[in-house]
Length: 281
Ligand code: GUN
Image (cartoon, rainbow, N blue to C red):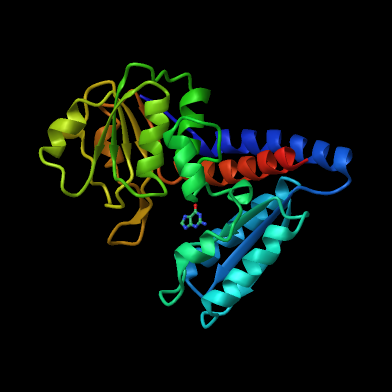
């Protein structure tokens, strides 16, 4: 089994992006810029946002952090995003999700112009992906595709099974695999005979958020197994959706958690920001 090292791959990509952001600054006399909006006090979101801002700094990208209190109204949030949309120093806008329950997430996100939607969450970008047109793709599934590319894993004609149909991971993942000529099956909570579906997969991507859900008896020998899950075990340890210790005996390639897909998500966010900046000029 080959362990897919997302941490090392992401570091390499971030070095490459730094060269591009330095070049951008030399050419246009300003930095690539990302605005990050965090509303409320969700501890996990605070950690994610801190990591994203730090990654920006290291890649030579200017970050504009906006922290709004839990009590902010939808109108106030929309007004902030609107001002960022008009700011030429801001090439990408990221509104950290989930938002507090009283806010209208759809309305706030739809204030982001598609060209600054570096998360690839907007209908316009998801529609482009569905039509196999050029657009911005959500960072996590894009990171998985980058791992396939950099590890020389071919997709064309392969049977790919995606576990999970979320707007952020499962759906765009399935579309990317389809666009790369895989035969794609999407499984979800209502899927019958899930084990049989998984056993047919040459490529299995697990994104369901259930600790160690995928076990060796669900894996075809030699399959490529990608674990997008970030869960905690009962004793508080980080683990994925895949039972690593058993699946590693069956898989040809496997991503660990942590150190697999996670670091690639941030690297792809930076890539989407640099791409957006270059396109804006
Ligand atoms: N919350 C969890 N993951 C993400 C992400 O990739 N982007 C944003 N904006 N919010 C998130």
